[in-house]
Length: 230
Image 1 (tube, rainbow, N blue to C red):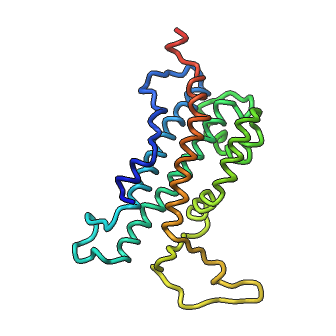
Image 2 (spheres, one colour):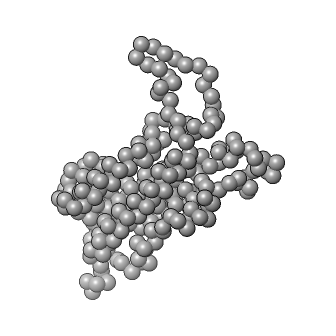
Image 3 (cartoon, rainbow, N blue to C red):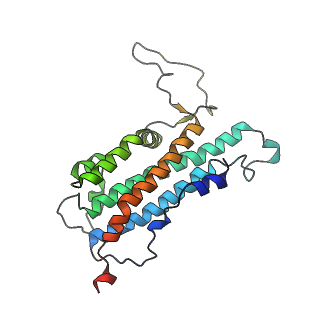
């Protein structure tokens, strides 16, 4: 697949753009709208990065003599792909935040300038699922999370636990292994083929776009609009 093919195959999220037509009338709605717009920006960045991971052989980054240099092609592909992984994970976080603000899952406290950060810090996946009253939305969210556990684990691993080694080459090879009665350093290494991550993210993009259509469009349309109110 080429970069152009991938980019065209990955559906855009611009169906959520409202071109500043919506002017929210409440703090909850403006915070929700901001995150819908942020979702569009972030998934579009993820879409671009994922499409760029299909580029080969990165002629703008390598010299002609390096056309067949698999190491350099894999090295640049990895950068785009890992960036896509993080941006996709951020996109999902923004869907959670939209639910958090729109349905006031954080509680009855009013939104203030000085408590937004604290309210957001409590917006965790488990808390959103637990506090949702709408059983249909809760089921959609739980099903999405269950189907995409591996993508979320990869992103969390990349952000917080351990860099994901490219299965096709090792930038820094370990020429040793540490073994004890209950530990084997070879077992605790984490390697993944880039093509496998690409396939996971192609599916993840499609599912995230569908989740946005199912959840964010109705939320966006329910925002109390100053224009409509007047």
